[in-house]
Structures are given as structure tokens and as C-alpha cells.
Length: 76
Image (cartoon, rainbow, N blue to C red):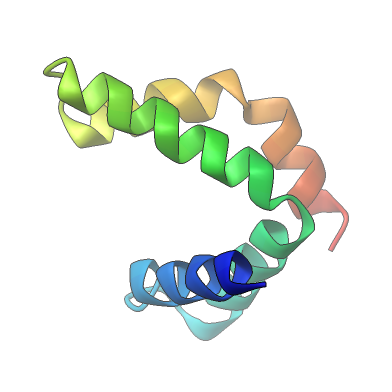
């Protein structure tokens, strides 16, 4: 329960510059499959620690999980 609270807070903080509807869409996707987003975050972190810039690390990992992410956003 505490873990979900912190995850929601992290999503709020990370999406503060997005339009409200996109914030809600991302928040719902994270609520549906928080483990996927944890896995994505960990893999991005590993790539960043190996020296890859954050943007490129995120793009690489998002491509890897593209199908899962698309299904989460389609089912809104």
C-alpha cells in the first residue's frame, strides 16, 4: 500500500509538465501494471549507470516494452 502511494507520487511529480489528460492517462496505466513500470525504471537506471544518456536509455527500454505499453494505453 505504501509502495503504491510513493509510485503515484512519483508519477505526479514526473508528469507535472504534461497536460492534465496525459497525466491522468499515464497515472491510470501505472495503476494497472505498476510492476511493468518498476521494471522499466530499473532497466533505464542500469543503462544510465553504464554511461548511456537518460533519454536514449529510456527510448531503448520503451522500445523493448512497446507492445505492453500500447496495450495499457489502448485499454483506457
